[in-house]
Image 1: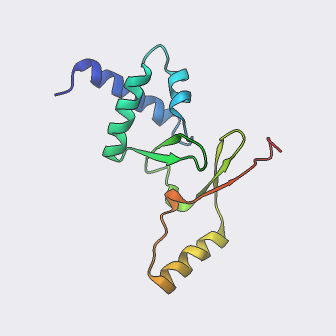
Image 2 (image 1 turned 135 degrees about the horizontal axis):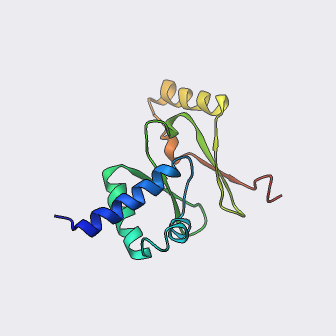
Length: 130
């Protein structure tokens, strides 16, 4: 059974993730924001348990080490959009596209293959970094 301290720490992290549910966060960002409440090791431990529970999704950065994390909630449904990641600043954007939706439909119709939109990530340079 988890100790009261572990439960309190988990609640602090979940509250933070819920408050930032429309963002894709790195452990570094979380640690900087919660530095007085949770240590880095604790954040990693709790994040990993939340991933196993399905509460958090882990999204890898292509061609770079590291991941970003997204809190899963019913009002934050990544099944309806895709992701754009800036290769300079690592900011992640949500992106909706009828063309990509057509591609998904084509994959289902022709191959019976359903694309996992959580893993569809387009890499490039955002307008702020150009």
